Length: 221
Ligand SMILES: NC(=O)c1ccc[n+]([C@@H]2O[C@H](COP(=O)([O-])OP(=O)(O)OC[C@H]3O[C@@H](n4cnc5c(N)ncnc54)[C@H](OP(=O)(O)O)[C@@H]3O)[C@@H](O)[C@H]2O)c1
Image (cartoon, rainbow, N blue to C red; front, top):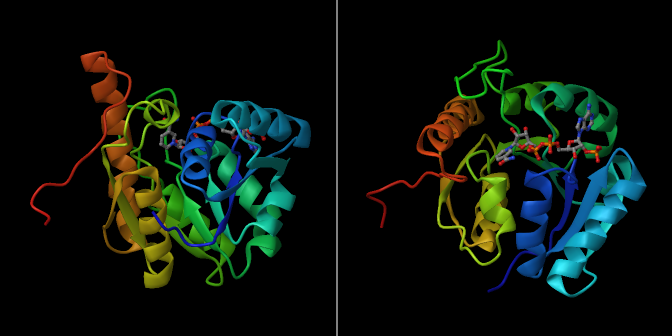
């Protein structure tokens, strides 16, 4: 499968979601940088993932260096950490595409939909970064547990919200690189519904005692 020659910088890529995405994208042949507040932590996680992949393809950097070297950034930090990190990276991210996988969750009630005053984490990111950063919301409903299990296909859909068509096409390609189906779900303002779905999925996982539910849209060709 052919993929666009993007260099992906996963900001906060050392937790759960970031390494899962990194693993799948690197496996698909994409260039992946893992970002962290601590370069040693990023290097350690990159090394672990490279061991799993059997080749040294993922590089660990601090968030600033990763954002600088990547042409597409992917944000995978907890909602509470998002604003401060983006504030510090705002100059570096200008002119780039930021794929926000962040979800506005309000602990401890993470299985209850929370709509912040800004609408969603993704809309908040766009407001903070300004119009020269093209923010796209995607991957909020794709479980880290599923991503990291390479034996299991990513058999869910990825709803993609954004105000820039070309940036959304990149997100669709990234979804396809995971093996998933990327679906244009409208403007960035719709991200509040997609982020809300994550809370619903967390609740379903708990009630049905399963690790990783996802969503799938029916009726499409
Ligand atoms: N987990 C999932 O299944 C899943 C699925 C879909 C979407 N998401 C969303 O993806 C995001 C990340 O989820 P996660 O489970 O991977 O989170 P996580 O493991 O709790 O955190 C991810 C990384 O964020 C960085 N971080 C934590 N606090 C920070 C702070 N105050 N400032 C800057 N960086 C900070 C840490 O990296 P360093 O210490 O290396 O800097 C950490 O490894 C969340 O918004 C979540 O809602 C998660």
